[in-house]
Amino acid sequence: MTRDEIRAQLSYYQDLGVTEIYRRTPTSPPPPMPKPKPKAEPLPSLAPVGDTLIQILQDIGDDCRRCRLCEQRNKIVFGSGNEQSPLVFVGEGPGADEDEQGVPFIGRAGQLLTKMIDGTALKEGISITRNDVYICNVVKCRPPENRAPQPDEMEVCGQFLFRQLMAIKPKAICALGGTAAKALLGTKEGVTKLRGNWQTWHGIPLMVTYHPSYLLRPYSADAKRESWEDLKKLLHFVYD
Ligand code: SF4
Image (cartoon, rainbow, N blue to C red):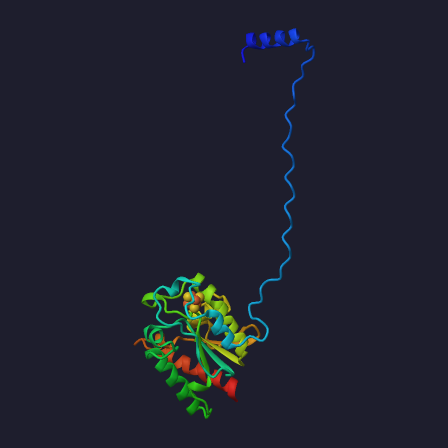
């Protein structure tokens, strides 16, 4: 507004009989309404009381689509073996053969694992075979091109592994390879550093060793010897 306009406005007010004009002081915005406090909800239990493998399988469902690994899988590979086993082997994820048949560790790496379990037990005088232990993976669907499962996939599917281990409550766990070790121990350490020494998963002794697919590689003679050592230690601890 120009001075002349203000003057004209004032004389207009005078004509109306208005004798006092005051400036309105800017008002501060009203204080924000307090947000309602969120109700303290207990965190959902990761492993429901009285959980069973059948219940976990049902919860996964026939067509789980909780992560992107569902897109190319044929079969969900839940786990196999003795459901009351004192020893559980945890691998990374299903490969092509496992994806086709819905059973873990049945391809070349799986056959090597079977030989390792059966052979070590026989040699050490421990009367078990592969069928006496329980075997499962961190993720239940095959990652495309056999890539390693990604952290978000392991987190989503890991809830089922957590429940499986809690339901079985084995005397010991064997993490096969770096991915399983990472998922269970939350560590960035490699297998070479972790193997041979006992770790702990929720109070359960855990041994990390090489994934059998690594042992199938031609340059893994030392790793083969070390993994037999790990397995001996593991079997004696569980079955002696
Ligand atoms: S990997 Fe696990 S979470 Fe992902 S789709 Fe398969 S079963 Fe569901």
